[in-house]
Image 1 (cartoon, helix red, strand yellow):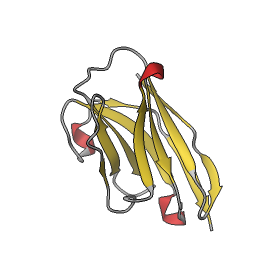
Image 2: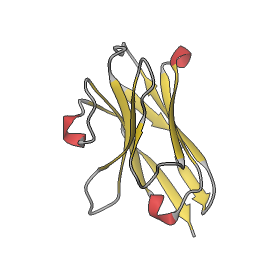
Image 3: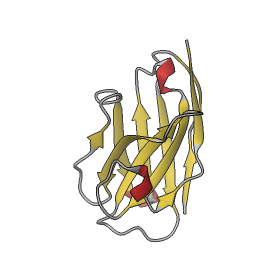
Length: 120
């Protein structure tokens, strides 16, 4: 089970850190990632990395502004976002899958989503 937290309202140019708590065992080979979705649009890839190791991947839209990281002791992974723009407004979801993929349909485990709103 994945549970997100940390969403909210932030001004343009601000920062926000989303957290995803993992209950139960997560295999070290698993990929953990973040997606986002706005009403009327498909869910889109934001970032991913392997639970054990590093090798993060980012969508071009957030590259250089976002960092996906782990807090293994808390069985949690994070998405830190800086220089936020109104276009970043969306519901953000954390997810996990056994192999690298940017396709949300491939992901097996999902959180419930957390709203991020960036005001202009």
